[in-house]
Image (cartoon, rainbow, N blue to C red):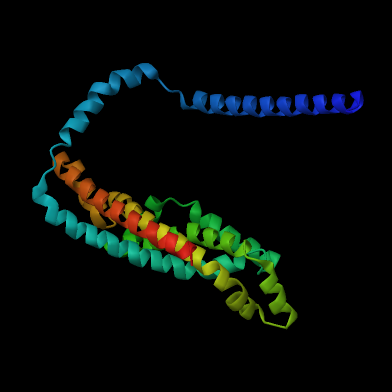
Length: 267
């Protein structure tokens, strides 16, 4: 038989848990209200802008298929930029991730490597594009280098988290038998991290194709360069063709990389 004292404790616990939930919901509402207030959304302005938005969309259609060959050539250049940019990012991200991992590197080294990651992530890809355009001139080389540096900020973090999530027992066994730091990383960490790291890399390659189109704004080559030129020249039908070709290829790469990631996760 339940005593009145234990029943009272259970009631207080339920009331306390409900109060906590209510407090969390109230805090979330306050935060979103604060964020909405900062946006200063003018609903009347949005309503008045509907005809202008409709007019802009109507100018995008029908697409001008006469520039499909230009779109395909530019898209091939975009894929090449993304491939090399991602590869550069991978090569530079691996040592940074290892030096950032709590289970592999000393604290002072982790601090420096993490600072480098954060510094790279804080620089927008457009700024990197401008920097390398100033260094190498207009075209794909600037976009490739910008993508390579931009990739480091994210892949290094992804790789670091994958390294820190490994099973510590193989690492401890290697350390007991006197394995060096490099041997621990090679035989205790790499086999566990590799499938997840490959999945992250495929995702970043797919993302970089879209990022390369944005870099075209600053003249860093690829399909984005052609897209921006058509928009600036008010040739919206041709710009639509560029976007449709990009959509088809990104969708295909997304489906392919998704299957490859599933295959890696099951092996």
